[in-house]
Amino acid sequence: MISLVMLACMGMVETASAGDRSLVTTDILRGLGYGYWFSSGDFNGDAATDLFVVMPTILAPGVAEEFDGSDVGYSTVPDVVLSTNNSFLPSTGDINQDGFTDAVWLDGSQTLLGIAHGSESGLSMTGTMEASGWGWSALDLGGDWNGDGFADLVAGQPCAYPDMCTVDIYLGSASGLEVPPAASLPFYQLDAAGTAAFAGDINGDGNDDVLVSPGFSGLVGDDVEVFLEAEGYSNVADQVLVSPDDDDFGEVLGAAGDANGDGYDDVLIGVPYARAGGSWHVGRVFLYRGSALGVDETPATLLDGEADYDCFGKSVDAAGDVDGDGFTDLIVGASGKAQAYIYWGSPDGYTDDSRFVLSGLREDRDEFGTQVRGIGAARNDGIEAVAVSAPLSDGEELLYVFSDIADEDGDGYASPADCAESTEAINPDSSEVCDGVDNNCDDLVDDADPLVTGTTMWYADADADGYGDPAVSAKACANPAGYVADSTDCNDGAPSIHPGAIDIPGDGIDQDCDGADATLPDTGADTANPETGSHDTAGSLDTGRKGKGCGSCNAGAVGRTQAGVLVALGLVLTLLRRRKEG
Image 1 (cartoon, helix red, strand yellow):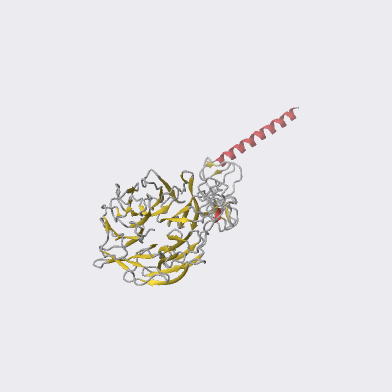
Image 2: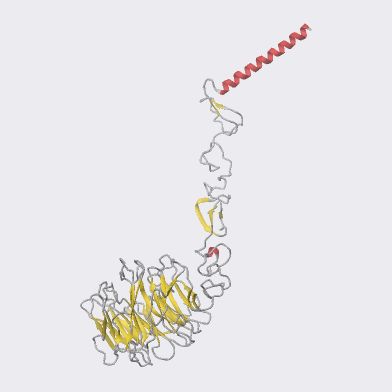
């Protein structure tokens, strides 16, 4: 199992295949905390892998919760809530060897260890343990230091010069964790975070071995110490894996399992801040082979990230035999690139040519891959599953589970993550559209889903005149109450003012929203402004102002009228003269 320090490296889910097997998304846990830190085990003894999820108060109120596995996957709500305190660094193992997985985590502070034991009803909190000094910076309950069958706890402590840093080992027993620690493994480092993890049985002696590192110290040249002997151990490491001058070598430590099938467990070291041929934080992962003599100090495999700030190796773990070929596979998180990688195991180890890429629903810096873990059979079906966290997914922390089960519609998702297993177009990677259907399987439909697309812009109509206020709008699928599609109202507080109203001249109010108030209504005749001598046209507004202009169109009209009268009089006189003569 892996050990993490409390430091962060600041879409589309594809279908993986190997032979006739495939890897699909089976579960997506949504909400605060679900994508931060997690561990796994069988807390209720039903043979399905359960999840133990914790979150600190950095983002919201802390949580420590259990999600039980089942034949149909995980529920979207926790089955057990253990704590609502500031919670971080979870780890799991069977402390008292009763067949139920137990859990530890930091509960409320870095100096208080929460302890919960499993049972048929799941986890229940049974006590706490106080740390000395600065508290704990790494916890791993995933190994058996002395080979007695009880899970033991490795706890790393931070320190600062000139203090000596230590990693304490607390033994498990039928009555729980034994205090004081059975061993304190020392190391010296200037301002070290203190990282430690069980590495599995490296030398095949029946006891799980321990890796110790300064963790994130901000220095180049950190080494990793290997402690192989439980009985008669000394304060001096049995082996030292020398840093290849990569930044913060040993920040992430993990057990690879028996990657090549030779009977000895192998060691993983993640270096997310390594330059790896780039400029900054490309990331690198080392795999060291186990043997009867201990760790081969020359790495057997070197895997690199692809670009600056990929943070490749932010989390590493043995994935189990995902593709069913008899070899342990490897999972690596690259949180800066928001991806995780499955490397298929083989007698020759792991290569970039034999891997598959996983990514989450949000590809824009959601830090998918912050933690990765092989979790075993999530559904009690014997099929290995992996889980990946994405703590910054558009404000919604997500935890994904991937497994090799049937995908009826071939969209890369299976139930319960896929809410319409027979419809390819409906799955968590689809866009929510305005059609009355939960297209992206987040239990939210149309306007209830903040991710909905294809909406209409609506405008507030406070005065109910049918015209909307352009300054007050809302996007929605359906017309919200009090909103209209129009956006041309210039006064949404007066129902008599809108573009369809008749403007009243001279009242100083723009009733028809055309940007100006009218003065006098138009008579419809061709009139003129006597002051300026200009003509208007029928249908325009007359000013009606009186003036003394000469040669105006009014004067011309008078002249034309007088001429007409004279012509008429002339005609009348001519008729009278003819009658008299006749």
